[in-house]
View 1 (cartoon, rainbow, N blue to C red):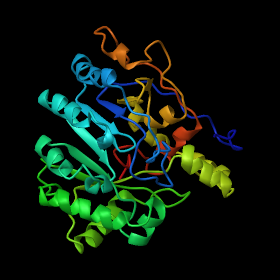
View 2 (cartoon, rainbow, N blue to C red):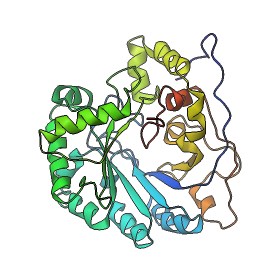
View 3 (tube, rainbow, N blue to C red):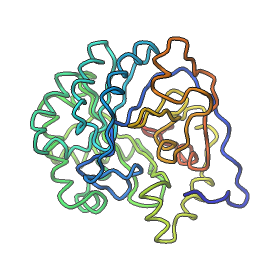
View 4 (cartoon, rainbow, N blue to C red):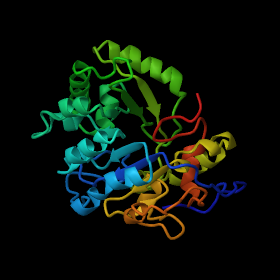
Length: 318
């Protein structure tokens, strides 16, 4: 749901791909939570999950395309039955693995040893914690989520995550409660570390992300009559200095059906990659080359360049 350009605004600048460094794979939309800001509409009722035949292609693609990082997302990617097998396979090849973890999954039935598995495999954990306030977290993510998230962080800390030695990295993700830009990442990280230290929690970095005006978050804003204003805010806060650093220049997104997109947000808007390379299977061919290819952009892309910028790796500046 995107509105026409606001008065005085310009279309988003054209972009070309650089070297592919990260393959971000959505393993499915099933999740044990149903967050208000979720841009993929994930939840416990979702049944879409990646087929085994596609899962088996991923290690091959990583080798052929010489991709150094596999970024696993969902839903809750850990709920896919093939999650652990895939992690073991690519880690054996020396690939870095990111698990985008909602923390409460660590206390779900059947996941009692998940934290130990992640530590044993040296998986980088990027965990959602949109605030250090219990009331704010529970308002956005559901009652009791904050307490379970803190419990999950304690599990990870006990295994060595967040010690700052670079071996078991633990990063937290902040996103605003409503239609506003994230505050400066550095000062907010310091505030997080101070507040969470009182709870005995350690982590490496805080990543600030802007909420994208798509899917569940867009519908909520539209219902409240705030969607046009938020889109206008993103456009007016566009920072041209962020364009060269946006994540889609080095990242490729794969949906649970094996289709390719320039980013996870394009995936949710059904905006496929331009050109003939459209499927995961295409990346398994040695002659496939996407460097220099044009990137499919639209007005939601202002969410990545507004203010200090936003990406799956946090702010683009500061």
